[in-house]
Image 1: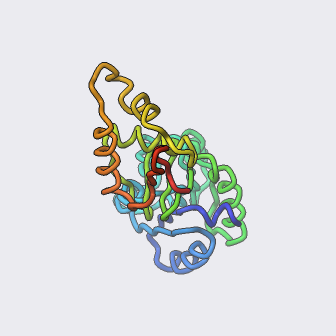
Image 2: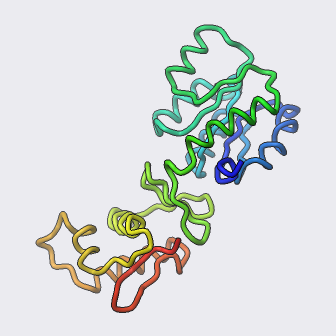
Length: 225
């Protein structure tokens, strides 16, 4: 159950009676539950939020489940998908296999079967992609994306390289030479000063919780875990 508690689930279903049946159950299992009632809304939530697992019905309006799965797979080959379908014909099953769904369940789905599928998938997801940081921040190690309170943070090329370095050091301070080499290594002939690092850190701190990056005087910068 602990693995599920760390995950954000996107639940895609258009029938209100089914949403009412499962929403509370799913909220109790996971960290955050997002609900979409059509494919377009689901894709928007997927793009805007930090989603670890998508549980989707196939028969949904505006963008059906298969189209939604293909759109998500075009962005991310690894995100976990669970299909809920009222049909088990060969064509649908082949599509499910080709899109690398982690599981599929034939409707009506019992809570025990759904929970077992979620637990199985969660164990594969948890710890593979994400590094939990302080102040409700998460570093997605696969996509190299920072999320704070489940919102993605847009970083510049230099900010991204600096943050990636600090995460890799796992709380050990990075000195200025390390930062110069890692962040500006492709412009080694360019004149980089201590002021360049301070400016980079200052701009980065404007986008994230202020104390997520600490300056250990005389030693360097580090990330808070």
